[in-house]
Image 1 (cartoon, rainbow, N blue to C red):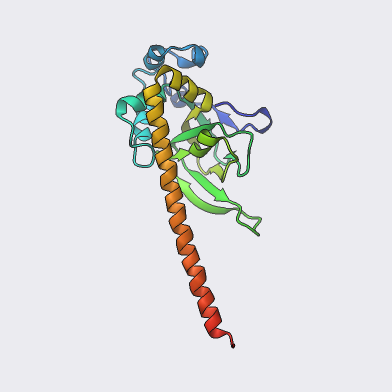
Image 2 (tube, rainbow, N blue to C red):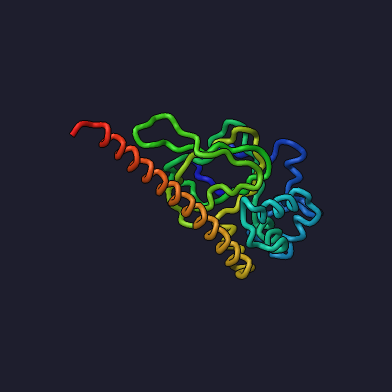
Amino acid sequence: MILSQCNKPQLNTFGNPMFENLFRGKKDIFAESPEQLQPKERMRAIEGSSSAKLAAQLLIAPTALMQLTPEEAFTVVSYMTPRKIAEGTTFIKEGDETDTGYMMLLLEGEVTVENIVVSRHTPVTVTVLGPGSLIGEMGLVDGQARLASCTASAECRCAVLTRAALEKLGKDNPQTATKLMFAVSLRIAERLRETSEKLKMYTQLVQAMQQEINHLMPT
């Protein structure tokens, strides 16, 4: 993953034998610069990798991008980079504007998503994500400041797609790249709709409470 040098999370690509084999088939994709690999070389590089197959399966899970076919998902995985995140590491920080050009697919582990709410200093847990979850896809699309902080509440293995890798995919396979971004956009739209519904419920609750207060207070 391309990360800013001044604020680089503790992401370790290697460290245990199982993770070192991620996305490796007959050829070691990390033995040469990824940008120099041609599409067919990328596919051969992860051929026979059970971890790459797992990543492709999770990429089209209900929690991720169901619109992709298994073949398209495997192609996308060939452009992703494996990472391991140590337990307790906050790898995405709310408000960060410098390290936004990537999204992650969680393969193993657990991630806690937190927000700083107005007038609070202690983060509030928004949700806890498990394998098959996409993290940071909005930043991949618009490159704007991160909306929440993400911390590995257990050691995590994930696959990372950078904006540079996405651009390379777009040049090599425009159809798959277009479908990928369409699927990502649909997922973002779905989350925005969910947020909108929650805001409506919150507004209705506030209005009901205000009516109760007005009823109880003397005129």
